[in-house]
Length: 42
Image (cartoon, rainbow, N blue to C red; front, side):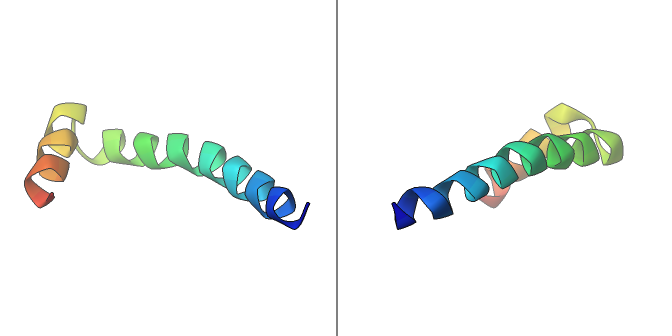
């Protein structure tokens, strides 16, 4: 029960923050550039 209580808020946070991060990345640079930078970093 404790695990589910911790997982749900984390999932909600991830769902809410991921689109915001994607929007911020698309505003600063094009999607292709951001993907290229991520692949280069990895």
